[in-house]
Image (cartoon, rainbow, N blue to C red; front, side, top):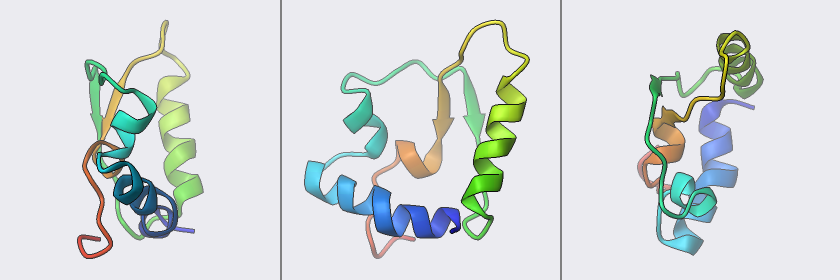
Length: 79
């Protein structure tokens, strides 16, 4: 599955139901972002997750990441 698939099948339906971005569904009041993470819509989602986990593995403490596909409201017609 790609990031596009995850957004279409998981993120977008949650955004529609909750009427807000996915990030605000899981963190109601939001978080201060420490880093911006970009992605490619057609990359395999597992590779994206692996890349983020690899990059974060050397951090002394967890950081809040701003990932646009989760931080922005996703609608079926936008992707």
